[in-house]
Length: 237
Image 1 (cartoon, one colour):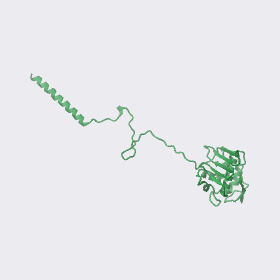
Image 2 (cartoon, rainbow, N blue to C red):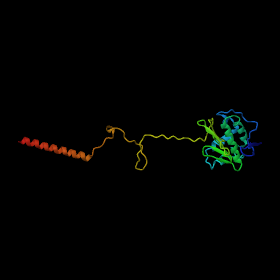
Image 3 (cartoon, rainbow, N blue to C red):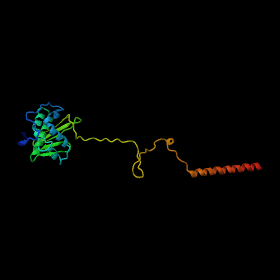
Image 4 (spheres, rainbow, N blue to C red):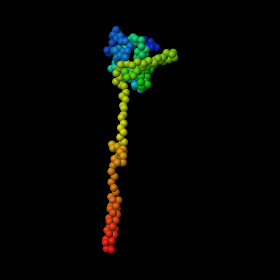
């Protein structure tokens, strides 16, 4: 079954549907809301591709997003029903996302179309038009933008919080620091001992120098001998 797609600035494009292509009369009617992308089941394949590829660098995004019908994960055969489901409401986010998907397929399958990414979104365009979409989970806003290069006022930027699961969301690693002061050992590795922080009374006990102790004992002994001599002399008088 062939799928017809009217490009935003080009001729009618007809592609052969891939395996498992949905019937044209099975288009869900889903109201605008946080679950719309999820409930628009014909969008499942392209949503998975968007989530996976939107953070690719600019050199890799085309290869990531443009999947031929003969390969697993292909989404071209679903695009007509996906667009119809997304654009049946009045919210600009979903209509702009639909435009992005339309142009993405045209850019993937025709010469001259661009597929780009700045590491946060996927953009698709041609000489006259570009649309971009970034999908996020419900912890932050997803966004969709478009720009018509011929008409400088023909641009838009819309956001929407979607109930999506983003398996490719970067994980923030929070490091915890301790107040332990680590001193390097002789081998260069750190020891785990802390520096003493108590007052002088709680500091480590110091050991007296043995030589100083011996000299002190000698002085005491000499003084005692002198005292004994004086006492003996007094008795002899």
